[in-house]
Length: 164
Image (tube, rainbow, N blue to C red; front, side, top):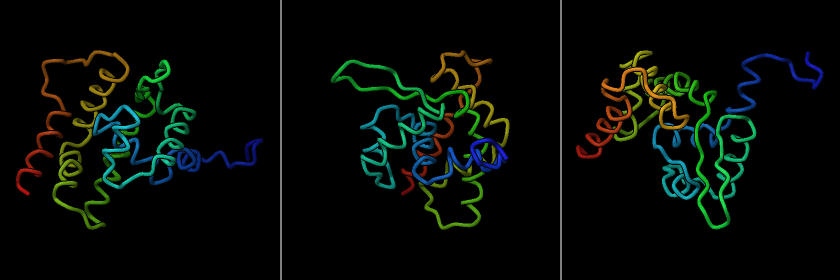
C-alpha cells in the first residue's frame, strides 16, 4: 500500500488516468483524427462530447502528462500535443478497438481503422507511433521513405465512407 492509500497496482494506476470513456475518446481523436484544438475536438466528436466535459478531460490529460498544451495569447487557439506517454498508448487503443470489433456492434465506417490496426499488428503500431512522435514531438521518423500508417488509416476510412 502506498502512502496515499492507493494499492500501487499498475493496472489501477493506469485506470485512474485513462479509465473513463471521454478521456479515451479525446485521446483517440487526437491520435487518429489529428484534432489538436478545442473546437476541432468538440465539433469532430462522433459521440457528442459536451464542452464542459471536453474542457475537463483536456485539463486532466495535461495534468497527467498525456497531453501538452501550447501556451498562447488571449484569443488564440491553444494546441494540444500528445506526449511520449500518450503515444505509448497506441497498442492499448488498438487492442481496445480489436476487442470492440469482436464483442460490440459497430458500423463499417467506424470499424475500418480498428480492423487495419488489428491486421497490421505491432509493426503498424510502431510505424504509427513513430509518425505521432514526428508530428507531436518533432522527432523524425526512422525511415521517412516508408509509407505512413496514418495515410493507410485515412485511406481505409475514406474508402469505407465512399462505400456508404
